[in-house]
Image (tube, rainbow, N blue to C red; front, side, top):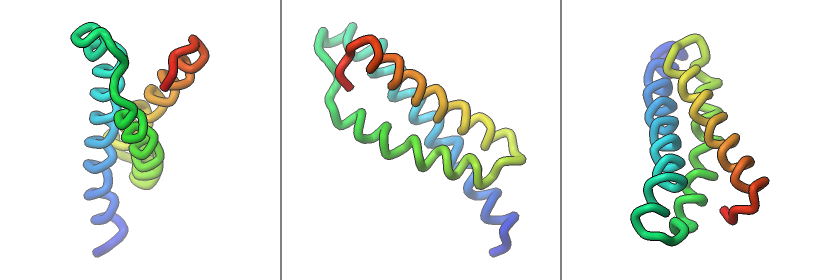
Length: 92
């Protein structure tokens, strides 16, 4: 397997994990509290904390493609939301 073939496979994993990050953050902040009236389970935060570095590193690995840029934006958005919620006094 060449480096280019590896990059072609990694870019879709990075994009998928980035999309999963955005979906989890949307669900945690918007949908879950409105449906249940309670805080989301802490396992979601653990999943986000595991997915952010994976998405970021895989996005950097396949950087010249649009999928990698979108994955990096998703990872940055998740980091921003976590930092914003912590600064507002919300427990992760």
